[in-house]
Image 1: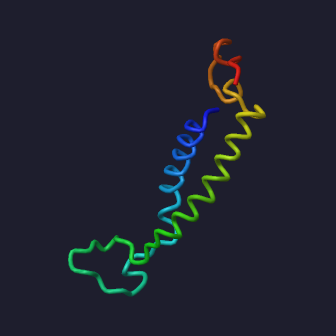
Image 2 (image 1 turned 180 degrees about the vertical axis):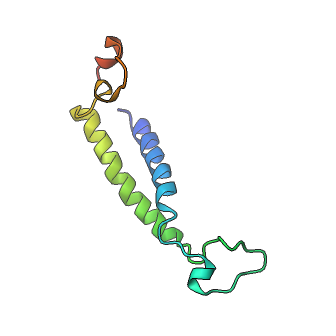
Length: 96
């Protein structure tokens, strides 16, 4: 696999993981007891920490990408294993 492909796939893992990780640990001003800033929505987070989100996202996406890359080379799970319908032989037997 080319380095550009590796980077592109890792970035996809990173972005998807960021959206999955972002809501964890957030509290609204009602939960923290903070005052609302004029114009602020009641549902807006009062304690958003982007550094913590980036760290968690980077760690989780690195583990997920490592599993993806290992599966790509070891062939633990193939398309034929997860396809709900019959996979054409030309796709199932493609070389790396």
